[in-house]
Image 1 (cartoon, helix red, strand yellow):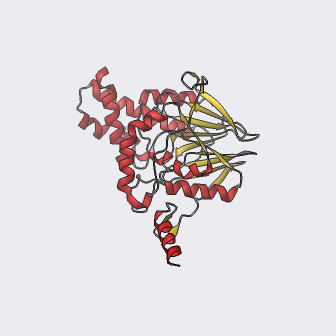
Image 2 (spheres, rainbow, N blue to C red):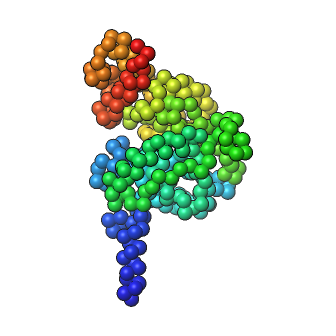
Image 3 (cartoon, rainbow, N blue to C red):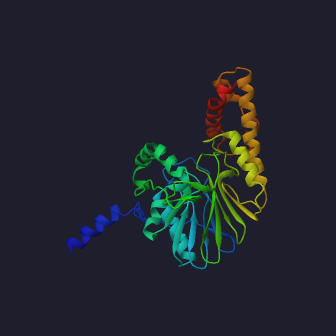
Length: 320
């Protein structure tokens, strides 16, 4: 009996799917198209509140005749486990694929929860490089969050989103398809935009378009790439024939309203920063004014916008 009790105690405190004495509950998901489900993330700052375990991004999964693909896994092992529970409540089909839309923590830290399913993780052809560069920062962030995200680890993609030579050395195309069984998904790696690891997923059956943080609604977009390039990529994906768009944050879209809103913010940000550079205004002053006309359209603006201004200022300073 003592041995059994000891084993229970070890399991209880080591099992990352249990925390504060409560089993993790499944995430709330809604079906937005036939066999396509989405979980809406909260508009909070990553890990800042005591009960914030990184559930801040929109996550999704798509069910084919033979298997299931997950699009983004959340900001911790716990969120990933909760998403997995939600999937298993909907379908008993095997979860075969995980697709990461980019390398930010709130979209990829739940990957570890799906390794037990034997999934193949796909990511942008530069995602592995992106994660290696951020590795020490991400690992430190997980450690600082402590027990509430116990079991969270940095998992690299298994395969790149691209058509490549057999040795995966030469990239032949930025696109590839995977088949879930009578359901093909078009995966695309994009040029540097929100980050340099942005990918999208288009369900060809229902024309549901998962665009990650390339498009956002409500939550202020975060600049971690190149603003001019981001606008170019938005101009490209604007041409895609879709019925439903799932942004990385905010409500699902039936048209390009959120895309245009994101593009407007980026253009205003760029124009205001360039205006400051041309007038030789110091960065600390540009931070106070750039993109302020957009403030009332976004949540977390005062938290996110200053960093966007600084990164844009530094990137284009040498041009003026």
